[in-house]
Amino acid sequence: MSEPLILCENLVKIYKLDEIEIVALQGLDLTVQPGEVMALVGASGSGKTTLLNVLGGLDRPSAGRVIVAGNDLLKLSDAQLDRYRRQYVGFVWQQKARNLIPYLNVEQNVELPMIMAGVGARERREWAGELIDAVGLSHRRNHRLAQLSGGEQQRVAIAIALANRPALLLGDEPTGELDSHTAETIFEIFHELNRTYGLTVVIVSHDPNIARFVDRVVAIRDGKTSSETRRVETEAADPANGDGAARAHVFEELVMLDSAGRLQIPKEIRERYNIGDRIRMEETPEGLVLRPVAGAAPTVKRLTEPDEPPPEKPRGIKKWMNLLQRRRS
Ligand SMILES: Nc1ncnc2c1ncn2[C@@H]1O[C@H](COP(=O)(O)OP(=O)(O)OP(=O)(O)O)[C@@H](O)[C@H]1O
Image (tube, rainbow, N blue to C red; front, side, top):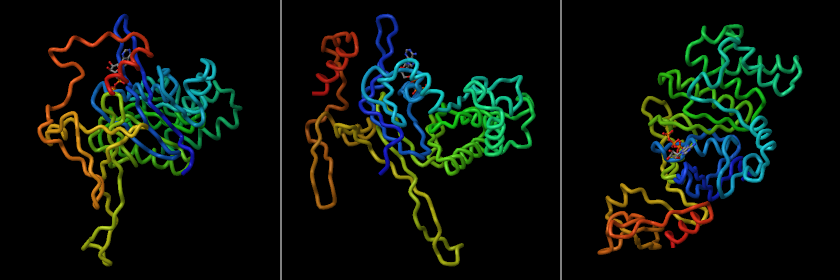
């Protein structure tokens, strides 16, 4: 397998608000191969946008490892991070105002990042033209943004994001404000760009049907990757088809292990099987089986039991990591 485009290992991001520390990423692991089109999902506050901001070089992680296209983001200086952001990543946001300049036309909007990067006029015009064609807006080239629909504006945003030929396109709910049909056409464009330019696409989504439109969906829970859903192509019997077989897609959900081999069993499953803080792991001819331990089933163990004193207040990344380590052991 080739070098991953994105590698996150034990990634931690702590926000500090006065005296309070908010742990947005709690040792997250993620690998994305070049050319994947994938989505990040998870409950509100689970850390999706934080991860996207870290991958895009908009925010610095507090600890761990994050390498994107060979750039070790924790080690880059401010100037290098700035360059990384312009050369390697394109962004598409949900709020169109964040992507576009309303008083410029489509072509001028797409050329603007290239002007800022010092690209010559001829190359600029050619590449802008190619991108505008690629997002299906050739007939709107000279239109101002107010003359475009929401879906068309988002296509312009994609073309702008690709102006500096990034390897990675990051989208924070890029289809969040679009109806489902328009959203579907945006995903088709992502796949087309992926096929034509080998672009890797990572988007955050709240769409419950997102797995239909991407190769892989990774769920984030409490600042860690917890499960992954992949689309698997199968041969299925199809009476309408003369030779009796048709291609069908099924979705397979897998629980992810972190770099230390730990797996998260979702709370609903722990409650359903009455799993406490111990589990029996058995090797059987069919594979590995996890069984609840009889009589050892207080439901989900909380970090602080009601009669325990409150946890000591962590200060600083080292203390927080030590505290987390102690709680895990
Ligand atoms: N700049 C910030 N300062 C302080 N805390 C922050 C900051 N950004 C995010 N957080 C906190 O970090 C946690 C993760 O937030 P994040 O925005 O990454 O979640 P999310 O999964 O993207 O949520 P949503 O789906 O609602 O956008 C939350 O508890 C949030 O309040």
